[in-house]
Length: 122
Image (cartoon, rainbow, N blue to C red; front, side, top):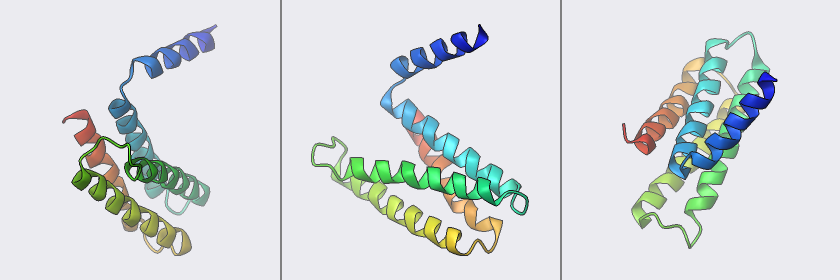
């Protein structure tokens, strides 16, 4: 019975949540997953791969969105998001190829958290 309540809440949250709030929530989710992988650096390589893959997919969606002609954001904001996306995709690839140290994850975590805070207006 509890499962049905949680499912109903999730459905309602999705319909009430603004696109900006949803983007912020996804960025926080990605940052938390990467942080968890950083915290368990040597114990769980699958968590690292999963977190970076999720983050890469999320940023691919952002980049696709900001490069569409019908995107309403100002050109400079669109360019900045695209540039961040390129950096994140490149850095993610490099980390997956050679995950030298957990500190390499810090910029990805920070970018996601800061952008989420900006989307939430905090």
